[in-house]
Length: 525
Image 1: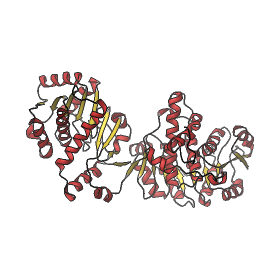
Image 2: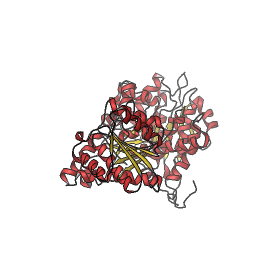
Image 3: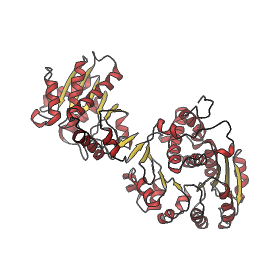
Image 4: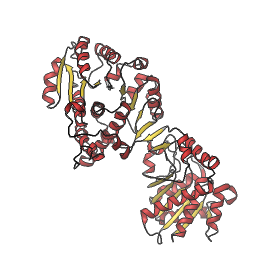
């Protein structure tokens, strides 16, 4: 699903109105009536509905007047309060206010103490409150009457419908003002706004419904999207098909390089994750003294013993064995549990420079490139980098706070600089790829913030690479499947105490529910 920034949406509106001769008045009518339809879908018969609309000065307020008129036409009891006097409205918003008033309806100006008391009482008694105060153009602070109105709406605790975006939420960044409307349903117009899918903003939008208001198709085609949200349909289209004649070699020969003393779980989960995602043959290559431990942990995964350092990490002497194994592999993962031992880090950098198979680089595999982003750009292989915020800070030299503040922009920027796919883990996770829109995922839950979760993700992406998906597609689908598996695990066990193994167990079902017929047999998920 396409996501837009405020400037992108503004340009789409402008192009539709000016270049394609669609009146702004009509776009506003379609927007408001879309909200009415959403309310009807939620409440059914509106004849007994008590609705309060609180309207602002701009186009968002104009949308609110269309909503008020539409609800009245369906028999609802409608009270409209405005923070703006009639003279403060212009253009389409003013026309729609006048159309509402022409029905014999009254707009109450929030001005005196008695007006505010009436508003508070009305909101408390309403079945639904429609927030039409601030639109996507908002940024910064909320003060004065708007802040007061938002506080009253939030304190009432009733059902709230946000028109286009909750008032006080920044459409670009997801930053929320104090106060910000907490919506139960956000009915947005044309395209979903990217800030609605970024913390903390997404906690204020709740359910999101996109209304088609007739943005010109040519305008959409002319504007290259910056962001996309991967949804179930997008993910399902990426799931590799399986044929009856396929065999294990059809689904990839995969190699995971990692492990060190005390960190065998990471490489084990990455190996299992690759199998659970559909990989055909998986080998984990580990320090020789740990091979028996891994063989005991893993049944379906093969093991390869490598020369090790005195600290039981992989030694540079393992290079020939690894290169030989890489030649037989279709894709690799480097990093889970591999340690930050200097000799091992040197080996990792050499392998990334020399191996020409697709590589998922994670954990201490990434840390080996601390301050060495240019070295990643020189890699021979196609890489999928999967850092969390601190690892991203290490390889880029950008402080973690700045990365978090620019969570959406950073993956695409680093992808362009490095030439590789970048999956920045977190909330939300996002995939950047050179020349492509950044892909966000709004699935997942706090229970997934647990040791080993990232190793499972590495394995899932590796398994998808082995089945022939290009790196960007494998990263995006892997991100979605991993998050969906985490949500399934949380639904079964709860978020508290969720462990990475729970996520791992739900990966096959997460794939199955996306595309149950891809096996050619159908399946019960």
